[in-house]
Image (cartoon, rainbow, N blue to C red; front, top):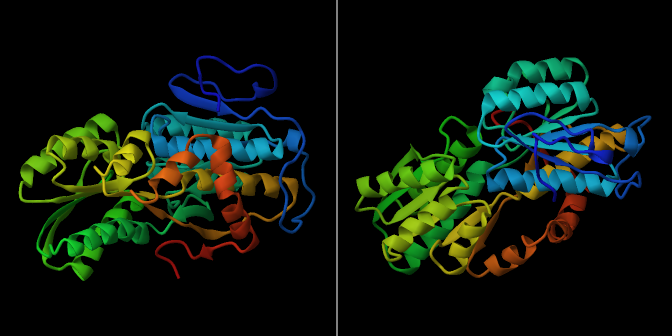
Length: 368
């Protein structure tokens, strides 16, 4: 994967990329041979070299966003489509809105967007959908008024319970039925993250009622802020032995804090950042949950490409993406898969084809 600062505009076949200060830019520069297919024809389509698609992430500094961006890039390379893959270099909602507005002018065949500030995008998304530009929301449900009717994301309540269930299993094996667990949401108010935290708290209430759950409380999305938040939370909850977070950065920060405490805690979080995965491998973190972000980036982009090619109609509703628990017993396979984008695509290919053949669709969260 090639990463360039957007202060430099790509040349040659990649020259259709977006350029703006303070952004992370990836552009898939490919030939015109299509490497994909499948689905029923949805009408007259476009040739690969004439298709303009964008994937916009929320924060290019975060592992989980980079995973989605890599998946989007892989879909473009597979189909021979130049896909604009961009994100602000930090969590910056207004900058992401500007990226989206730029993409409306250039990526007229479809935009996939993963946002942690969806409220800021409602008007821009509505204008895009009013113009007939297909928009897929990734990881965070679109808000009412956006006009977006396609969403790919996890059942995050279930994903949160996966992590808590493993902690509960370990506690029960050790004969521990009472104590305190602290549960945090990285950005309170974002359904993706809040639902994970609520799923953790609910699992303890149901299966280990002797444990007091503190939270969900707020941590922070960035590594520095997350470490500071968890340092304060641990200091404020000295009787707690279990610390769980709904986000990416905590997988590393909780591991560091657990090491400093002599490994006396059960610590776990989400996603696949390298430091956090190694902490699962050495037993410092008991587990992480993989929301399969690469797959979501790949599928959202591929579905837009296939719709533009006339090979399928773009779905409507909630495409439910699976999440997987990663423990010390399984982390080696995950680390091997994470070594290259090719290995990731090979790993997810069968899953993608199964979902494309039988889309796992539900009503939007809170509907139906």
